[in-house]
Length: 110
Image (cartoon, rainbow, N blue to C red; front, side, top):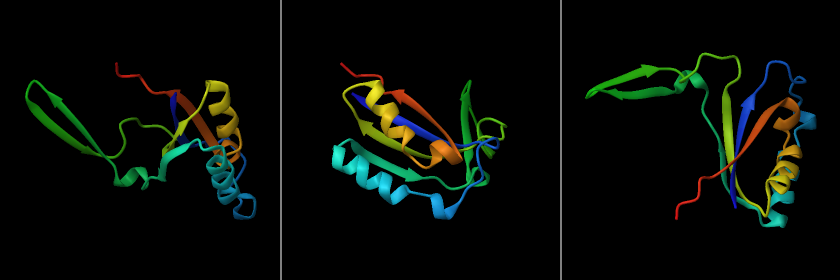
């Protein structure tokens, strides 16, 4: 099953340390498992646009959809046997320490 890791900042997490950022190690780990499909960092929320269409009226606003201190920083798409496998992979990502990661299954199309 496919899972999305939604990688976000967390103001209550431990401070970021470049020396402890093991993203390359994590990438090697997830690649060896054959679970990684896609992923990327995202530009800061200041660069976001929120698009809404209501009763035929287009509204485009600057900034993120939600006003919150936690911001989506990136994503990864995984192919895993179970949600437990996806959670294990997410737990080894550096942002599990320096931020937070939401693991969510894709809705299957049939």
